[in-house]
Image (cartoon, rainbow, N blue to C red; front, side, top):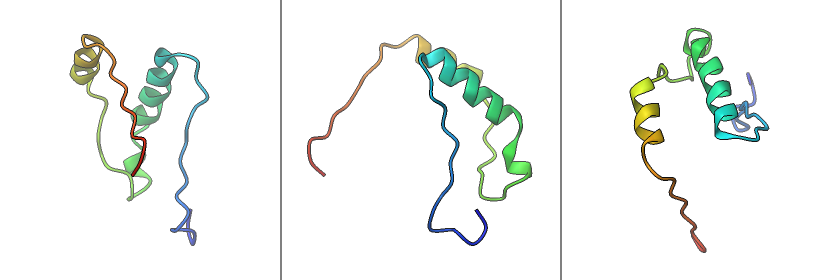
Length: 66
């Protein structure tokens, strides 16, 4: 937000499944937001990384202290 650089604004869905998150992310990336906001990195959707991630089991890490 202009004038509020200390408070980053983000979009985040309320999703029930990983497919919902994938759909949301593809939609946002597909609009190529880096064309409108210079702070957004120009990274397109990479289907090969999605396929690679789907072939692996999910790992969850927990850090009890920092």
